[in-house]
Image (cartoon, rainbow, N blue to C red; front, side, top):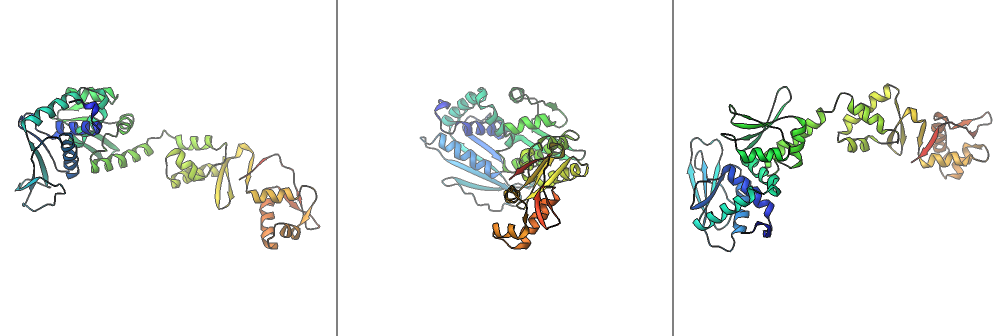
Length: 346
């Protein structure tokens, strides 16, 4: 069977990984797959039945629970058998398709997939869904593990292909992957995305991992370097993939050190480096300055020109006075001041 012509070839590669992790490779008269995550059972069922939709076959799903309780299975046209397993800490499932012919065809597909580097990421994602786990603990321990009773050449070839450093631990019977760079590479291929719970734990752990592994003062220095142009804390949080609260903590420190300034424009704070010699104001305040271009004016003239009350104009002018851009003289008229700073209106 030509894999290249199959619509879901990458999903098939994931299922090959699942099967090699949790299926019975020695059996010749059926295709089977077992797992305690029903989402994986459902995905395997969808792909295999789609793959062999031209053939006639019967599917059985065996459910094992501690007390033999009934579990709803949202899969049609299959026989359900329920068994008791006193050792089961949670329900688990075995999916079976009985057919010598289809078993042979499936193993041919498996052979074709596992030897093709094009499908390495998808295969590993499937294998990890079956045999992987994320370990976190004290002392910032973050470990990606792939359980395997003994070293497996195929897994090692795939990890080397993606330049993921690993070690095999005989005591843990697992491949052990640690370190920020290796987590980055596992994230790139979405190693945990097939298993819903492992996906959640992987990305939550990875997000915390990224935030904690900036070099000392990296964020402070990077934010300072970025503020040659005015930016909001929100824009900085997007740029550096950090929370606004974390960004604000850094901005507050830089402001207290006298390195940066903030200007309030339309209910937003814009931050700029002090050494840039820049004043940031609204377009409305810029219009107030422009109104003083030819002669000095009273507050009443401002309120009339901008169609606002006297108090509103007076507040705007006092704010401009604080910025050193205007001054009120003895005759209570406002005049424009010269400044060596660059004025930016947003």
